[in-house]
Each structure stands twice: as structure tokens, then as C-alpha cells.
Length: 91
Image (cartoon, rainbow, N blue to C red; front, top):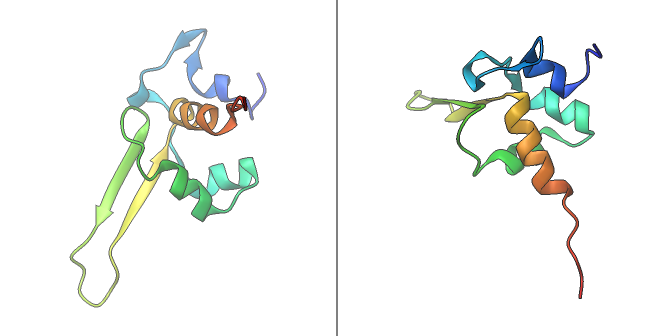
């Protein structure tokens, strides 16, 4: 099995994993893998919610800015990647 294969990350012996069973990766992982900045990947996932996306808000901290930690499973990455690679038909 190719260690960089997204399919290998979401199945065990051909049986699909549930989203909570998948390994989740930080934004920096997907940015390196796809050759985009972390800022771009965060923008792509800004309005994405649902299976395979974990968000941990860190807010209300005195004297420090609020932020959200985002962890993304291969199944969610596949879904968003497909949206950004679809060809638009120009008439």
C-alpha cells in the first residue's frame, strides 16, 4: 500500500472507516501535500463542516488572540479537493 495514498488512509482491509476512526491531519499537512499555503487551505475549509472535520475553538484567553485548531480527515479532504478541482464549463 502506498503510504501517501488517500484511499489507504480511509479503509482497513477494504472496509471503509467511519469518520471518527480516520486519522485526522492538521492544515499544514494538507498545505504541504497540495502545494498551497496553510492560509489557502484554511480558507477552503472555512465553511466546511461535517464528518471528517474537527474544530477546537480556543477563545476567551486573556491577552492572546482567539483561534480555532482544525484537523482534517482524508475523507473530508477528498470532498473539498474535488470541489476545487472540478472544471467549470464555459459556454
